[in-house]
Image (cartoon, rainbow, N blue to C red; front, side, top):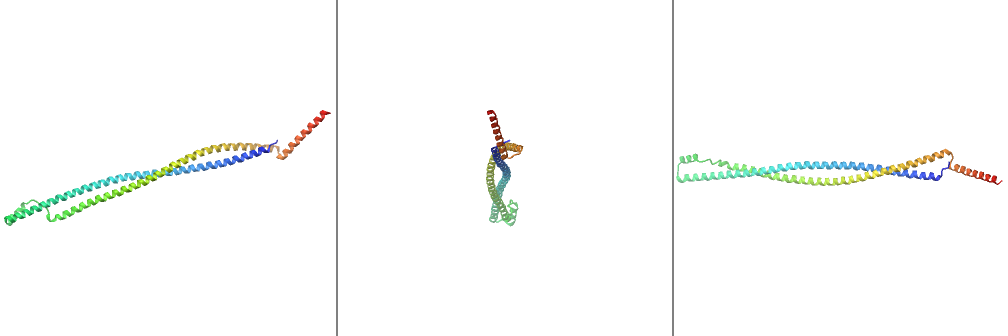
Length: 262
């Protein structure tokens, strides 16, 4: 059986080309699969980081609101207490001023009338309570300290509120920026993953078709190889045998022609 070398060469080229294409496509599929897996992992990490930041923001907001309410109440209470101390101080001051004036008037009246010691003692016993005038300075000093404490508490609380509010605003600004950056990365990586998956799907289809073509070329190769084994001869031997067959046919035809002429 004669097999043209052209068929061998064509089949060989086909097998070589398809094998190279299969290897290249398989490598591309592997690369795209790895890229998709990597992007999925990175997207998951970014999503977790975003969720954690938002959870911290919620917690910080809750603490800030509670702290703000507490500070507002402290300031209001301090102001109210300061006003109460100021009123109490004024009431005591008015009381002691009136008591001092009354004492002065009584002393003056006693001197003018020339009353005796007995009359003065009787007047003092019947006079209204005029307070602890000798120790009034200590009372006013204590009230001043209390007023100072409430005033300082108000100032310190306002300063603490301003500092806490500033720190909260800074944290929220920075965390919002971080969330925005991470969300943009998630969007970008998600788009990249989708493109990789689509390309991977198309590449796998192309790989399947190319593999099918390679399989067909291999089937042809095995058939050609089987035909070679059936003859047991090399191409050169088959060529010589074919030429001998042709020569024999020519000689037989010549002999037939000569017989017809005789």
